Length: 404
Ligand code: ASP
Ligand code: MG
Image 1 (cartoon, rainbow, N blue to C red):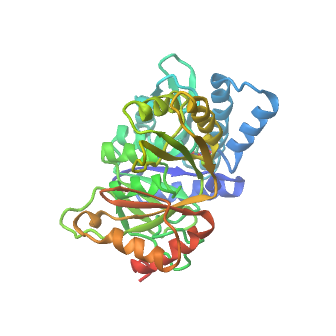
Image 2 (cartoon, rainbow, N blue to C red):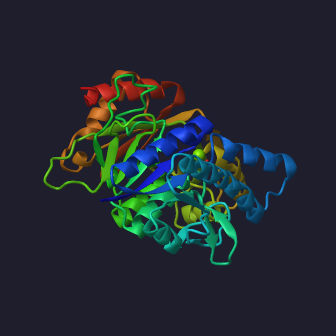
Image 3 (tube, protein in one colour):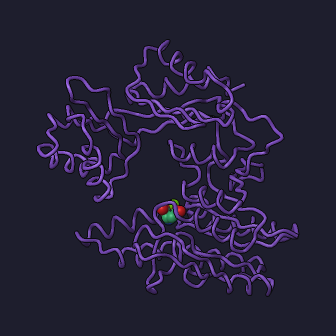
């Protein structure tokens, strides 16, 4: 008998019919002889709707009350799912994040999990019942309800799997796995049978929303295998787990892309110690989420510094740069929101030289200009014009033969 945590996303619990289908899925898993802990997201687009409601009501959006409001979405889903399970004769009890003993820090709307107690879930399992837990929420060390940031139900599921010693965390959604590229852009993209935690972290960080980045981080740190699969079938999906050292790693596993960022360039700042420190300290103090940072070779003692940020942070980032322009003697601050990132990710690139050359040649052959480059040991990312990014993804998918 194994213990699995099954996490169902918003579309999987989107309406009463879907909720009954999820209940049926859980009932079948139990009949197979496994113990199940269920984690649910809010139904459909409920979290977006709650945020909209708050924005229509308030201009200050106090964090404590936002969390109280947003946590209601998952509460609704868990109670309804338990009802559907009862109808099938499956004993099940719902638990809020707080009842499940998910203890977080005190940062409202983006709290981090500090500890998972899980006592009530263990008791529930021992009594032969299915605990159904509200994702995305916890209770702070100050005893207030908190939420974990958008997409946080994945983190809840992985954290529970780690705390309860589950054999796996199954993530069900309308996406049947992790693909070699976004199938909407590359029709012959293939589902990957397996990816390593390290690759999945890079894939999640560079554009694929299939598993939330923090959940993958948590899974890697605690060695929890994640099975990403479709809630509409029993087909196997993608296993995200420790890399198997006895197997040769694929040079490239996936091509990802991201159109959600914009570029800021601080023009002609003096090339001397302290300039970048001052600028980036101020950006950090404003909680701007920086991604790529590039500083050019200096000419005549000045240099340009460019970085990318989520479009949502652009206004704040530009404000910070403009307010420092005089102090750091910058000539200008430019922005560009028509950029996109395209990345190739693969653990095998560590031992295979020449991947960057192949990537750059592929883009050059298509007349696609590279504006910025950044790398990690298992990833190469290029910033290109947004209008060319789909062509770039298709071309790279072909170059690295990911559709074969
Ligand atoms: N309902 C939350 C959101 O939409 C959490 C989640 O679905 O993971 O962000
Ligand atoms: Mg959601």
